[in-house]
Length: 305
Image (cartoon, rainbow, N blue to C red):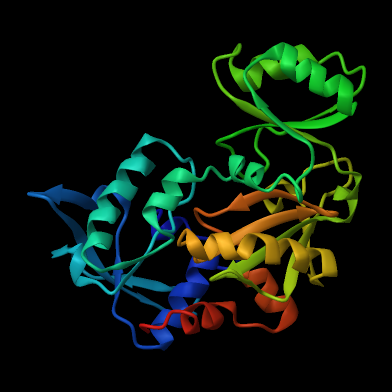
């Protein structure tokens, strides 16, 4: 995970998972990326035992580090936030060595490498908005003229960073393409703009392919089109609609097949727009508003614990 001191005590989902693990008496080992390494074909880590509490003034305690082989653990949660860069890929390779010796890794390292959180939606064109992934300015221009109202975003972004909304006739089209594609050297994604964003970008959490029965609709703040909490959106819990459940039924079996145990999908209106597999959030907001314990559901769904 990222340095534990950087977690937000009041809203971080990783902390909810840690609290429940602690309540169950688990021995919790803490690693950052820099703590993992491979030696003679085996995966190791400089582990620090972690204790967590619900005291906002002092909510975690770390022991001195000690060297352990990762295969000695029962379960490893990969909760490192993006960016999804080459160092992230190397980390999944280290974790995969431990997985080969029987450790349950959540989410599966190979699937973390294989499925980009933006591109993964293209596996489901029947439930996603019209989408283009390209580096070519003419293809993007043609798509823009066809759809007339689009959203453009980088494939590696998170939290609504560098997402642009273009309406027909917008003179900034060329600038947006230049910035996002770095003059045609990087792929970008364009999607049809969905007006239902005014009602919120719904985050739906799935555990082993099964959805939590409530979504967190992240309603954009005034003057903003991005439904991201990091961009000032307001999170409002809502029961899943019939369409939400249809989308979950469509994606859930593949998540289970690919070892994607904990996933957060984003739904705007009737469309799947993103699939978050690296470090899904919104546990705390849904727990508070709907009187849930999603972390309990998470750990209950793992047979070996």
